[in-house]
Length: 281
Image 1 (tube, rainbow, N blue to C red):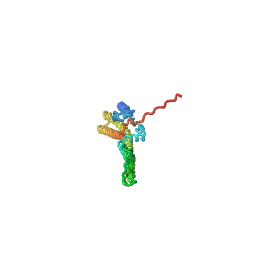
Image 2 (image 1 turned 45 degrees about the vertical axis):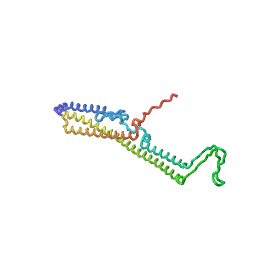
Image 3 (image 1 turned 45 degrees about the horizontal axis):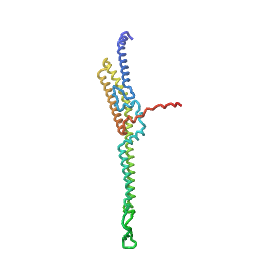
Image 4 (image 1 turned 90 degrees about the vertical axis):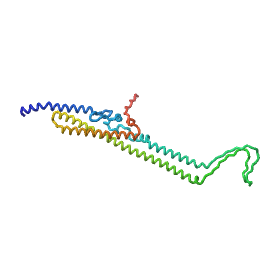
């Protein structure tokens, strides 16, 4: 290598070292900004902080591992669903109708009691010796029974109809539970998918952000033209847009899940495990 080439290389070396140093500093700064804590993503660039409703979750960890078991969540959703509560009230109403209808069989039964005071004169009614005679004083008690044939032969069929309506109401409630279960599972899977995609998009945005910072330094040094710089910045903008889209998908699924279950997400988070107390004995 000639003396002239060594001289030119020596002049370019400080600029190259400066570029590498700035890139390393930018990467370290970006890594510190993009660290994920217990409160979620803490990116100032290129991603804003996730909404406060999600801060109780560590979004660097699969959210399914932070929630209560899915069966428990489903039971909570069933107990809070207005549709299921409505169907349960319908069932109670039909049960009461059935019990009341069974009592209607006894509407032809009536009891009576009366008491009369007077002398001991016998009052004979009727024209034949077998006709009844009664004292003018004392008391009488008895039961009157009058059952129409429609009640006697139709009451059982009416009861069967009401029992069938109760059974149908139970099936209707079960159907609503299945529909709610299917909807919760669909939103649950969408939430997990959106969280994982958000992590991938966030990593891509970090890389694009670093590339944009390096390109800005190289543009100032004249190593690249404005067209190349605009291309790199456009890639960074696309990466930012992808992050925002995935974040919107995650938040949409997050809020849908919360609405379907009927309680705030903070009540669905697992409680931290506590270490067992050692036995002093």
